[in-house]
Length: 494
Image: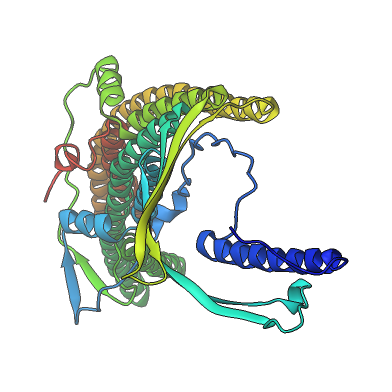
């Protein structure tokens, strides 16, 4: 027992001194406590989780006409088959690369939502040193040091935070999981789009090559006719008009050949861009596009097959499931949540003079005045869900239309090919007859000029109908969702 003694009348001074010493002790204690515990939280408002956004970045259609060219130029001309062109497109096409990036984004969202369900464990090591200036705190005691310290502590601690029951987080994770599956299915669908783009570009170059060869043949035919008309004019057996007419026809065919060659060169550049080749690379197509009729196709069976195969349709189904889960997450924001947080560590002035301390806290959070935000989240989730339902219904109808359109195009192109083949033979026969009559002097070369134009027109129509037939078969493969797996079944080989 400690007794303070003093003269009578000195009690007020003694009480004042005692109060100052108590204040110093309390200040030192508070400073040490703050150094050990850090800043004390005064409480925060819980932020409710928002529903997962059921959206994917849309890839523009023209992205499938581009690529990332990262291969060197091969000296000379590079031989290229249709299979090789498709393989290069599947590796370098820009549309497929951008679609694959959506998978990465969807996966990152899924992992973020998963972490909300898992415990979070952190570790920390603290070494704190502190000094206290009493005068700065308003304490001035004569004969007492103005600076206290340095003093400090060392703390080795692990913390655990875990949301034990949170229905909104769980449903958000389910939504993100469906979104990830939808993104993967979109990549598979994008492969069919790449095959369609590459196949169309390859077939177009084949048609251009056939058109150049046909036009070159027309140039040679018109040159022979021109020489024949010039010789007969020099011999005095035909008028100058025949020679001029033949010269005009000859030069017209030369112009057509220049234009056809330029179109071929430009379409080769477009093919190189689709499959990721440098535009400086010379290419030689080694596959042709022979005429090959498909067996009779039942439109209803084809539509049913497409509905079962199309990956974009399956992806929309997954997005619809994600939308339903997101809507459920919005409703679950009203539910209470249970969480746990705790820590355990070793604290003291140093490692040798320390002891273990810990803390455990269980929290029950009940939303009370959050109805405006919850209703807003519900309305947003419902809007996304209705949008996906509408897009899914529209896609089913679009697939059915694409399949039936492709079948009609194939049937029409098959008839056009048959008629064009007949026209080619008839036009060649008419040209031969006109040339013979002109050589015999029976008529002028006007009939020859007309016959040459008919031959050129018949050849062009045959090339166009053959291209349309092959493109229609390729479009049917895309509509059925089998372009990347059964291409050769629909488009012939060599």
